Image (cartoon, rainbow, N blue to C red; front, side):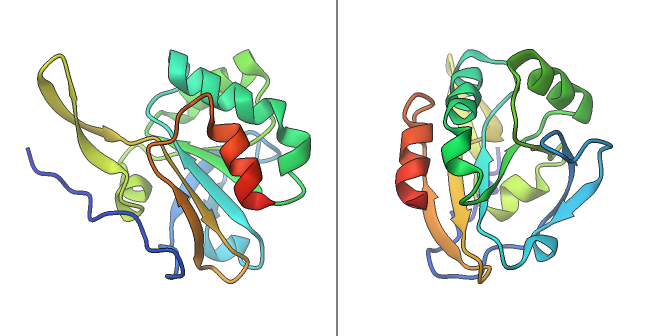
Length: 162
């Protein structure tokens, strides 16, 4: 199995451009969002493996619970390879106030170095590594939180955003 990841973007380097379908968090209607369209704002991309799984639910709900603290500091997008319909269901079920990006062809995950070879019960497969990337107003990577724990994600993100 080919490992496609080239590693995370370096802190201080320009963040990779992306375009993805977005739902929720004021983006109802399934429009497209691009990094270029968010220029001048702090952007958080938190990559997670799959909607409505135990760890991903803990991570999303943790962020939901600190949303008042985060929303004024950054535009936050959850990113997974799930479909728009899956994202809509996940948002509705857990009352998520932030938008989710649908990356079914894993182009955004690959660009950010989080599409990696994983292993479960001895079986190898490609999937998303739970990682968060913070992009500054200047379009450069401000921080990378690799392999973040679902339970610790919200606190770690609040600390990085100051």
